Length: 304
Image (cartoon, rainbow, N blue to C red; front, side, top):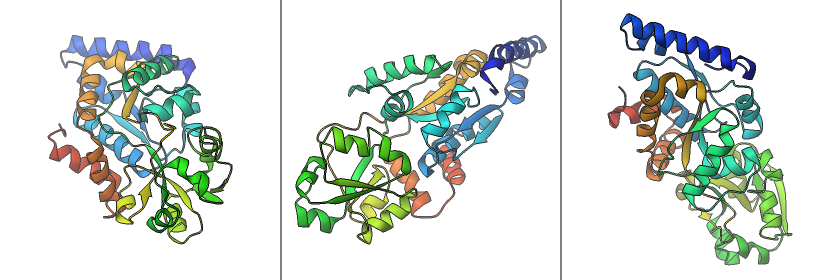
């Protein structure tokens, strides 16, 4: 729906005219919904794609036109697209959005974090909707053998575990919520970093002993399936990471409560257990993100 920041005002006028025309013709805005595509984006990992597909499918089932821009990559690539006005809907993660996206401190209280996120996204002409009860946090993971041999159960315990190599995606190396946080917040001078983009490659490297510590997501079913140990973040490095959709003002201004109520009703049903189940269907069972999203919506009566 959005093109560039410069075109927003003109686009909003066109949308308003479309809605006025629809109202006068008696079709209650249905033609405007169909003629005004909403651009839905995701980060470059499977869970984010599933979530984007869930919201996209729900919008389509309710008469909205949708354009998908999936697997765009990390926030370092996505936020310039948000600033340029090229994305209308993005399923975000509260804490990471504040810390990585905006360079702000993330409150440990969810309500305070959501309020801070709303203020930050307002500068990008975007609205923050209701957070889902489900969250997906970054976790630092070791093998059971490593945990048994070293007695490590929390991140701070790593200080006494000798030289350690952390495997993470390239952006981890510079992030305060990742490698830099281990150095600064935890003071772990015994940790070096190895860039490994794909989560499956990090899992393999951890199993093979090529790395000692891996960054994974707390809702990845592979952690339980492989018997890995997710270390307790005892210094509170990771803030609340509830799923939260952010939506362009053009969309919320154009469609109002119709679209926000729809999206909030979807988010309300996304629990952490739901995320684990959906991820398992993709990562372990080999189903596609789009099929998993569509089936979940149908199972929950949310497919229109």
